[in-house]
Image 1 (cartoon, rainbow, N blue to C red):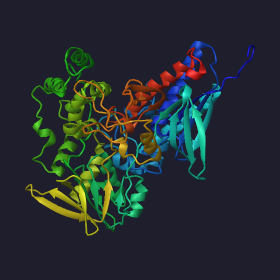
Image 2 (image 1 turned 30 degrees about the horizontal axis):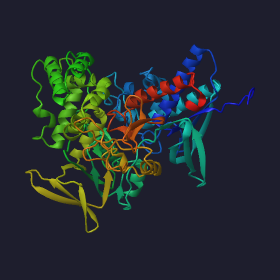
Image 3 (image 1 turned 180 degrees about the horizontal axis):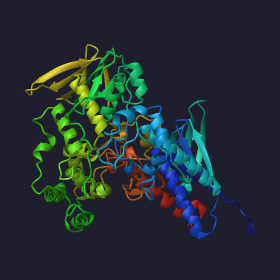
Image 4 (image 1 turned 90 degrees about the vertical axis):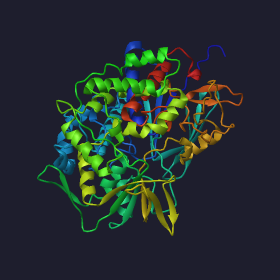
Length: 585
């Protein structure tokens, strides 16, 4: 009708998950919106942001909540690498510095035992996980206030779970939300949705099997204090599980500068099982060497001029830098150190971290490798599929063991526990790792002479970390999205680079596939294959986090989440200030 003025509805942006990724998204969206507002000097259509979180608290998410972690559980990454704001890479470190006094009061055990051992590198500081949780809560609250001051309506849904969503006409997303307290369902609409649902674990119906080391208090209260416990994995999560189950004892200094463990009256004995029996390396001091070969320029040259990038190209550049830095060929044979026992390998890593292997006490291999991290995502994506699969099969464990080293204090505690014969490490022979025998968990492992031995346990903690196979996610939302085809698992790509569907079934992982939820890595929009075989990118649904690990190698790291959410935030805000009609956004 001529002259009618139909009121425009608000543009609604929904973030599903209020943990680290959701908080990073909110903060960077608000910052980008503020910058655009100042530049455009005009107020766009009304804006709403909906954030839906299963917990009652926004910010910490699962890994950094004080309901899950305990004061002695440290962030394994340096504080300088934990900012959720790409534009402020030192944000978490600065926040922690300002709250140092309150932290020292809250975590005296960490300060007392770890004052000189948290890191040999003065530029790398490790803080308790719940410190990161407090930082995330503070940044979330600040972003909400800033958004509302700019006229954005923020609707928070704590204690709610999204159980399904689907795209309708005009790129609108219908969202079904469950109130976890009342059990009532409600429907919401959104123009854009970010899936930031974080970690998941496959539950078992056996009360003696723990699918995750978290919450730590749950382990302590449900595993008897004198139990013989199997821990699956030797990763950072496994070490956290060890510290949880030995927390009643105390650590003290020895005359030689090591740690001694004094157990409580009742002792849990712990056996760690893994395929390689390798602990993460121990973080040492970073040196001043600047890579000459494994650099963004050299790698970009390879990508542009090689017919197909292969792992050997990258390993050649790494070898050249290691040789340049050390002045001799790097002894790769000693990296896995198969001839040493796990305790001997750990002791060597502790020595190298404390004293370095360079002239100024720096750890040279770490110095070289850490310069690769800012470009690891691009490197991984530049590899053809068969090389990515090869990396996952042959190099992934070794890479992450050195890319994400443990804090020195954790390594020294672990060493003290092993010397006390409370913690043992075994290399398993079989997959799956255990079988049930007479109601017990039975593990087959390699003996000192390579022979097969067996041991049984009443309790098992699965500390192998997050699976990258999204079709194993038991959450209701994941099951429904896969079932409806709204999202799909990343399919295999054949040699002719044409996409192959997995017999039209989105809920299964193709043989050799990454298992990742399928996204466009440059935009994080979900991708799917339609019935006619055409590959499309959603205009409305985006995904960031552990669910994309098969494609985005740093998806579970704070910096990786920040890079991804910044990309989406820029896209959303640019759409708001574009001249497109509301119905097209």
